[in-house]
Structure formats: structure tokens, C-alpha cells
Length: 237
Image (tube, rainbow, N blue to C red):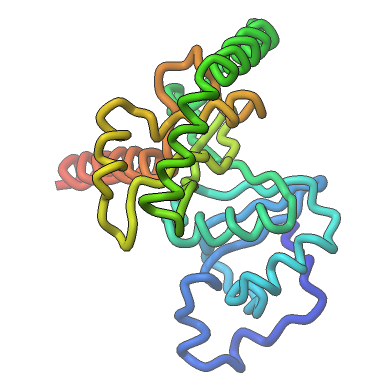
């Protein structure tokens, strides 16, 4: 059943072409047991939701809705995914990517040993933070001297079961250019030290070799989709 959590909507056919072509309006919202599913547009035309074009309106809408979590289709593309992820973060609503069942490499974690993994991750991350705290403090002081405008940067990453979270790293650029200090930090991966905070929060694991970025997942899904379509086309010919 398709419903809307937005109290006021505009008629689709009364909109200007500019509104109808808006990328933020091209999605289907499905309400299912406290979960809001955000999917690519279907064959049926749906009412235009004005709040999808305004992040502030969407945030207010999510805040005052009974939504427990948002599940969004990865095929919607990077811009729309980040738009919804930012809104959910501000509204304090968890957001998950709907990952295809055949993408086992993206479904991290073994549920049987998950509790043991979390305990080990927490102990190791906490120990490393204590051990490396002088280094972290020294880097913060150096960054305040050489690039005081930006201390941390954030990027969306995909955690267990497709959960999106903000990964925290030291910023190594200034005005879109890497700084000499940032180049040195990259060389020894010191810019990744704040990721230990994400480990403590349970967002990511030290026991898993790779933590996928949102860009990685989108590229992987798009490549698989392109290959599948090419195979279908060749088979049809």
C-alpha cells in the first residue's frame, strides 16, 4: 500500500515541467510497518511531494512521522541517496540501503559471532585510542596551525545490513587541494585515526578488512546492472 507521510501534496498534473523533471521527486514511497521504503519510480504516476525538493521540509516531515527507519534503493543514484541520508541524519532516523540478495560481499558480519566481534572491536579500538592519544592530539594541534578551517571530514559508508553511517576522518585538504601535512598523513594513514570512534560506536569493525564507501557500493551495483543488461541484449540478438 502506497501512502504519504506528508500532510499537504500538490496534484502531479498541475506542476510545471521543471517540477516534474526534478530528480528529488522521482521516487516511489512505500509505507510498510513503520518502515519507509524509497524506491525508483514505478509505472504508475504518483502525486508530487513538494517536500522532496526541500531538505528542510523533508527533515521536518521525517521528525514528525512515525517512521522507525528508512530503506532506500541503491539504484536511485548517488545524489538522491546522499540527499535522503543527510535528511535522515538530521531527523535522527536510521537509513539502510536495500542491497540485492546476491551481493553477499556487501552483507558484512556473521550474526552467530557478532557479539564476540563487537566486544573485540570495542576493546581494541579503545586501547588504540588510549595508546595513540598523544599522536592524535599532536595532529590536531598541527592541523589547527596549518589548516585551522577544517579539522574533520565526513563521508557516507555502508555498514552491516546496509546501514549508512558517517565515517569521521581528519581533513587533509584545504580549498580542494591536499595540504603538505595532509600528504604526509595520507602516507602513513594517520588521517584514518578518527575512524576508531566509528568502531566504538559500532558503525564499523576492525575485524572486517574492507568497509565499503557509498560510492563503492553504487559503482558495484551499476557495473553489475550494466553487465546484466549487456548479456540480455546480446542474448536477445
